[in-house]
Image (cartoon, rainbow over all chains, first blue to last red; front, side, top):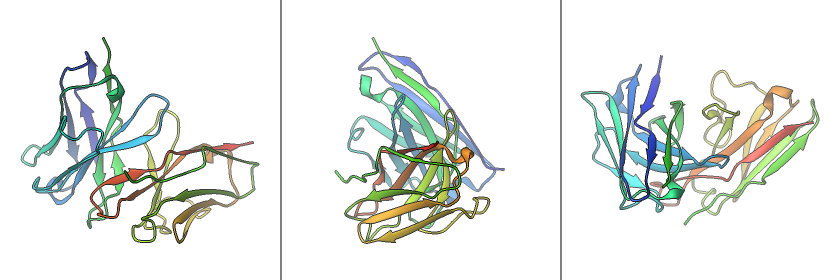
Length: 120
Length: 108
C-alpha cells in the first residue's frame, strides 16, 4: 500500500524558514518523480514544485522560485521542501504527491498534508 | 503564466448530468486530468489523459476534449458526488504543472 506522510509544518514569522519532509512507502521511490502541491485555507490547489526520480531535474512555480528548494534522499525514501523567505501568502496545507510516471506529470497518490502558517 | 479556467460552481439535481468545463490554450497539446476533493480530504484522481478512468472510479464519471476546452461529465449525479473538482494540465513546455481554480459541485 502506498503511503505518503508529511511532517515539518508549523507557525513561522514572515521572512523565516521551514523544512518539510515526506516519508514514502509502498512503492519503488526512486522510480517516480515527486511533487509538492499546496492549498491555502478555503482556496484551490496550487502546484509548487517537482523533482525527477533521480533528483537531477527540478521545477518550481513562479510564486516560489528562488525561495523554495525541493530535494529527495532515495536511500531514505524521503522528499523534502526547504522554504526560505516565507511570506504570509505561503500559508497553506502542503501536500506531498506521487507522480504516475511516464513524464506526463499527474498524481495518483497524495499525503494528508502538513499545515504551514506564516504569521507575525 | 499559464492558466486553466473553470466555472466556480455548478448545481444539479440528483440523477441529472453535471458538466464541468476547463479551458486553456495549451490543452490541444497537453493532456488534462481531473481530481475530486471532498472537505478535509486529499484530492482523488477521477479522470486522466482527457478521458481515461482509473480503476475504482464509477462509470458515471467521464471526460472529453475539444480544442482548448476539456469537460468532466458526471452522469446520474449522486449526493456523494458533491465536492470540489479541479482540472490539471501542464504548460506548453510540459515542465510546469497547472491547476484550474476549481469548481464546487452542489447536488440540490
